[in-house]
Amino acid sequence: MGARKHNRAEEIKAAKKITSFAKLNNVPTSPRKMRLVADMVRGMNVEMALHVLQYSSKEASARVYKLLRSAIANWEAKNEGKRIEDSNLFIKEIFVDSGRMLKRVQPAPQGRAHRIRKRSNHVTLILDSKKLNKK
Image 1 (cartoon, rainbow, N blue to C red):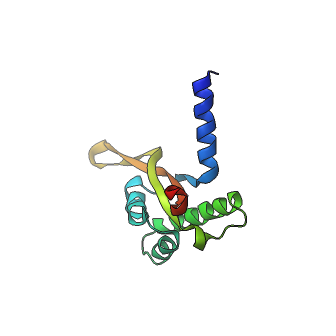
Image 2 (image 1 turned 30 degrees about the vertical axis):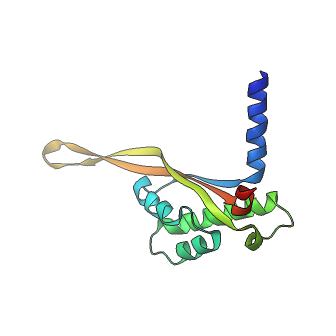
Image 3 (image 1 turned 45 degrees about the vertical axis):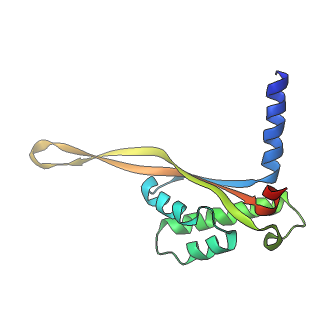
């Protein structure tokens, strides 16, 4: 490995120690429905996002709520001895990618068939601390 590539890999490794993330793969809801929930909490403070997701009526919000709790647990594992309230955590990035698509066929009139695409998605959530960004 070259020197530049090695230095870049070390920078990425150091950045991963500071930020924490959680991924949710193959969620059996359409990406469009999940993006509505993701847009709702993007950039929010963690405590506020937990309250918004907990009382949202959307079905996808329960899954994002659980994912956010997982990301908080990952942050706590990396930052032992620090409190969430003092670190001022917020959702730095949350994005939804489309996952695999199950293709089914439904009978239609006059001997034809219509395709049904059962979509799924992958959600990635990245937390960061506002205090670390100011340094």
